[in-house]
Image (cartoon, rainbow, N blue to C red):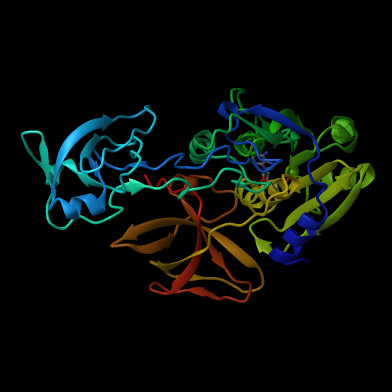
Length: 400
Ligand code: AMP
Ligand code: MG
């Protein structure tokens, strides 16, 4: 059995990274991954300008004229920089160009106007309130590395840098299939022994959030013939993700079918939940994951394995944020596997606290209502006591 890190490294090493790219408008780029480093077309700021509404002046003149300078002219936003007449001050507004000859700005609140003369306070400093050309980034600078996934914040930076289109990887195509004789889609009444299918629905949502083009392969019976025919088209996809049937039971046919279609790289990982899990390849394009059927195992193994795989496919480096938190209750367990508990994270006076939620069975979805993070327990740990420091992984920053 592989450890989590071994399994993640094995996946990373076996990913065939994306090749196809396309150029798209910046306005369509959120969630896409850069295939080419975008370069700033301008310095930012593009010119020396004012950080405040006030008066632009020359510090030597100000000292020479003992803080009294006649106001002459105005620098407003969108106008080319003017020229400061020696011995005067110029009215200036936030974002307006610093006039030639000026080297500082005094904010309007500290300047008194007496007739047409601005009276400055005694202690005004050179460079106050001047935003200098290029102090943020420079024209020609590569702004992001290849493999970076574009966020709304990045859109602001790229737009400010004059970038109006970006080269991104064409989205991966993914096929999602649920397996199980007992599964029925919600909306249909249940017969005896049936349950509502939930993994495929969640996997599709998770994949879409990560920027994949997803095809819903539906629910397939635990029948190798049917599964083989559904997966016959697997080679057309970059990712094929199944749920259920990945274990060693008589009806667990997924592994068997994948072994016929391609090659299985491993199928057991020393983690809880999620031990029966397979990763493999079909041809040189398709990566498949056979995720476990238990709903919580499916969600967590997606996060632990499919997310890093998608990141690597996009030429990126996957990480997640592990934080130290004070745990608020006891949890005992037998050692042997790394374990992820569903937890409730909260902060108080700037400190992070975690509660191991009741109802940790991997079939128990109710706990997800309160889950906003995972508590990570090392292989050899016997658990923890209230007040201990534990490692947590936030899943969302929205704690409501
Ligand atoms: P399996 O991995 O197929 O042995 O399934 C393990 C458990 O997860 C069983 O209780 C299944 O009924 C349940 N299960 C499997 N697939 C799904 C699914 N797509 N949605 C909800 N529960 C599932
Ligand atoms: Mg099953």
